[in-house]
Image (cartoon, rainbow, N blue to C red; front, side, top):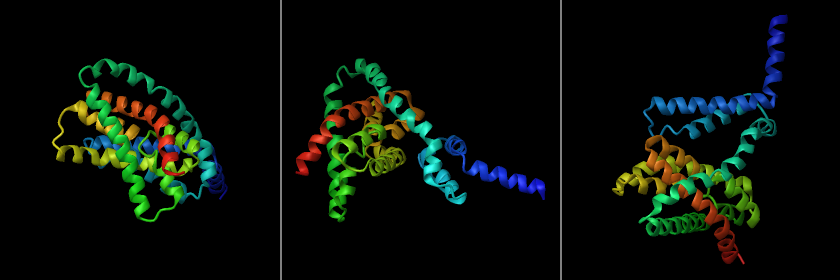
Length: 242
């Protein structure tokens, strides 16, 4: 009985520990990554989506409050700032490859950014969503750290924005190969740039796992879209929400 009582005490301690939450997060992603590799990189087996399902199910099962979970997960959340700054690296490395491609890429960047806003906000508005939902839709195609910063700047919920951004990234990483194949887009730089604009970090990770050129252009698109959106989205938002 004493041994059983000790195990229960250890479990109670671990289930309320922020470090246990960190372990859950890292383990869930490792499981998702293993499944992704075992499926021969099938886009439907997205490691981030799998990890989210595992984490959500686990903390629900052990009845861990979200505040406790975030105490551990905040160590990973902290790294988002460094990841955002590091976007300067793929932008710098990719500048030399823009020779002869700058005009179509810039046109794609501007068009993709505008379409992502117009389609998301327009559909949400037609479905009767309130301003808190439609406002959070504006930066949903920007990488999450920048999207949350934009959300704070325009006065909408960073939490909702993060949810929409992550959901967009996951759906983009899963659906992009099928969409691009249907459109007959075969050049890796074109595929990568499109994925980087529409599915930011999660899509870029997927692009790198398929082809280095696709990953390079995806990271370039993600970085450029983040920089442009940080300036343009607040202007667009206040223009349409006076």
